[in-house]
Length: 297
Image (cartoon, rainbow, N blue to C red):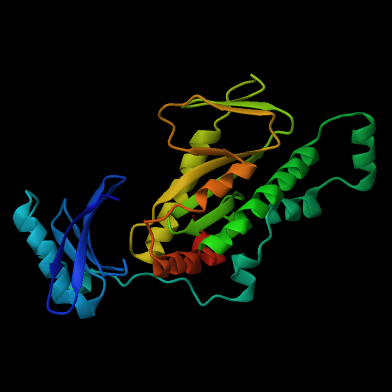
């Protein structure tokens, strides 16, 4: 999100204009003093959308003033009948509340439902034969360790969700929501391994490149689509890779758009702020904790 482009005192309240450019969109938001979006203008088409009807005149004044001082299209208010109401998930029920998910809930369920029986586990251990079950078990342990670290950030104003189910039987390991926006966190457990991170590849013990960064970016885009669809304001989401149990983590990337940490380093996110207001944090959290909001993500 770009810095504020100015403030204008309207008839009811002082609004702040903020430029926002992401994924091909170019918008100017008019926000209340607490950061809540009251309306926005599409600077490519010139359309104005009023989100808070009680501030309509002030929103139009702020956005029109910007158009008069910048070489952008002449703004025009979108007809009310052409602007659909902001969608809302259905009422939250206990069955749909993801806030109760412990770290690794999806993997725990998978192990319970599809894991090998006692005899198969004994045989694989005797033969020292790695199985898919071993991968699930290590993944579960890693998510639990990272989840414990993230849960400690609650006292700093952050909200944490675990095992967010998406379509096609995949999930977001952890979602961290707070003053600095949203972080979509992907946990990788590589016990006693050395990890090398470049701009486009991750290598474990000098092995074949793994597409961890690309998949993390794609996951963050899915999260953005869901949250902005229901929230009605820009929700910045950053992808994060957290490596668990590694002996060495070397990041040599110069243009990597994914944050990279070891599990104990996620505490560095705690003091970050300046993106979402407390009210916006709670609104994003209300959407994110609703299972049905993610059903088509």
